[in-house]
Figure 1 (cartoon, rainbow, N blue to C red):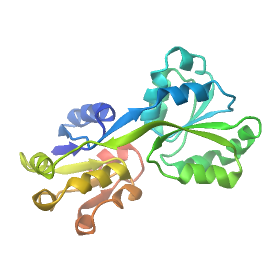
Figure 2: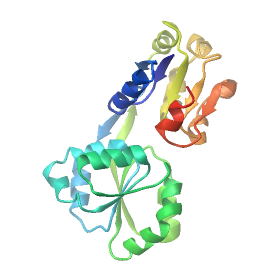
Figure 3: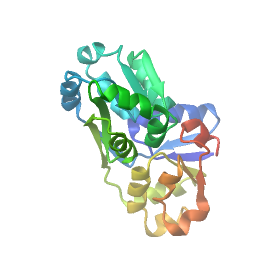
Length: 239
């Protein structure tokens, strides 16, 4: 199958490898790029905190870029949103990694009591991206758990013409499109108009979660397939 992968370039590399190993023909088609903010992260790490919360592998890439600074924190407890983020943390050298089920809400459900206990001594450090789901911050606020929220990166749209989208979908025809985030899907359909939108008729639109699928236009809802769980293995199982 020819599969369009809309993830940012750095995040897509491993996905492309997995798809090739499964016998598919993946096409990288990033619609957003990350602007990293290492300095605020460096400063936040040097302030008192009881644990680190991370909701994306992109935030881990920012940590990895800090070299000597991050090496002094590798023994700290880190809470990862899901397995992909946890893997990136372990590869960076963190040894005490706790794993949720792929959403900020699951972090609150699984670790809320522990967050409250930890935050009673020092604030939690949440290394966030922008834009992001409000679920984790809202959950921490409901718990009364103090947290220092630091934007480790911001996602920006890549300028694209609708003709470029149409070409990627038609030449040769795409058999599926992968969407990993609501913002990526939103940006993709912001530039997908006219003939490009027509090229998607009948093409499965595979979404990591129901939240992601909400950014897909109403006239394409019959094309939507949502992964059984918010992880890449479940998403690729839809192919």
